[in-house]
Length: 233
Image (cartoon, rainbow, N blue to C red; front, side, top):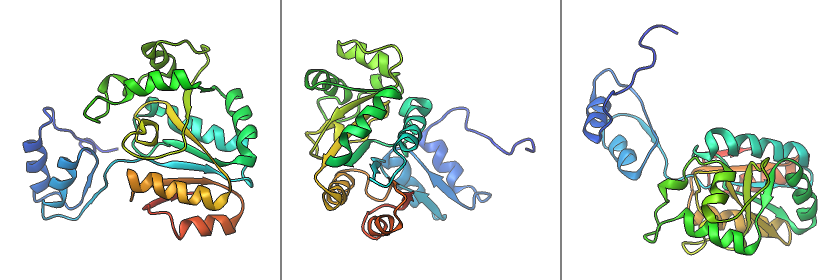
């Protein structure tokens, strides 16, 4: 690429970002970051694209290639140890698919925490004021387990916690910028749809949803109702 194609501010500050966004040479702003950054982009007078927190659920439908689906989730969630806001935050399956998904996931390096382990890690994920604990961001799964006081196999790539609810008292239902996933098991397809909407309405509305399916009917059904701007099939 030509020299100067990619540039950066050597000292990052909100004032510097506002100056840059207001420069006459800037024609379009893509803002990723905290609410302050997104608000500044929208207030700049320039065309801007921005969104809040990501909290993308991934639905593994019964028509999916389960091995491939989990491989995709693994690759996405371990890239930069899960610091990308668009990476998956939970897996949702129907009850009839639970054991198949668990078995394949364990083969690929997913570790399903027991209730005590999940509780210990939950205390680490968020601070008392509800904000994400910066000490866990981008850490490897094995280190996160050690920090929470339990051991996992050395080939562990992702920690998984069973969850059924979404909300401010349910840390696994929120955006976790590390290789940690929630695992929702619902009775049927309609319950999966309701749960995905519930998770996104709590946090992540307008961001990302993933569906692994080869049934075009179910893809269309979800696409018409899921409140996101980025719908991945």
